[in-house]
Length: 270
Image 1 (cartoon, helix red, strand yellow):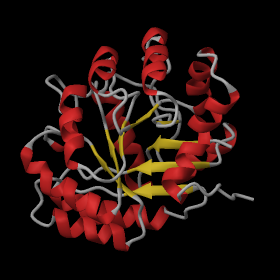
Image 2 (tube, one colour):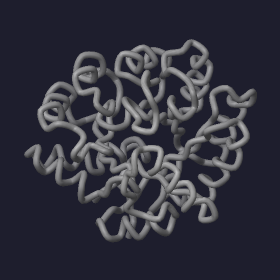
Image 3 (tube, rainbow, N blue to C red):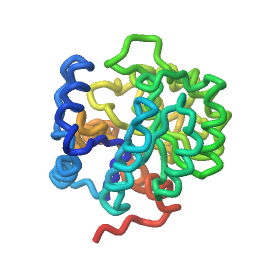
């Protein structure tokens, strides 16, 4: 069983433009799908992935409704679990969080650099409290982003402060923060926070991956790829190189995800 907790796709009519723009902004990153839902499903089939969490991002206030409508439309809770998003500076962000819950979505994605905020900014506290009251999962882009110049909005130090305002599950993507291995060890490991493994292959030094797993354990680690930028095969190469036990691999590849998505009940994709 393999559940990918970090993927992206877009409506068919904008997928090509969106993926090319993102690739260009990040220095020409190679994309491994065409950015569509069908492209994601094809990739899942090729890489023996049973289910994927699709993380959508509202990059302005006007996008909120359409982004979340798209998430609801593709959210089948079998192959695809789509998360919604709110734009923090939107006047109706709190109301839109309620609509995300009503749409049956299990979580939200927030990207400080695309959305223009620091995760520990006090203005975010009402949003975090609302997310917590609704029992939604929050996934943060964490660490550096190659499409932006520093400073970055979700460094480990900032994430540690933001955690104090949550009472529902929080996930710091990319092993807790791209290019932030020492900061993750110093400020996040051992806290009540999940990390996903997305974009780790060739980016997360083996030394830091081993130290993070040693200090944080595997109960709050989630397999992720950041499709279309990395594939399941790429991320599994990193995990296999870490010489994890079978039980730890099971936790990372699906058991921890099932706990979050189904309160521990196994996914049935037969």
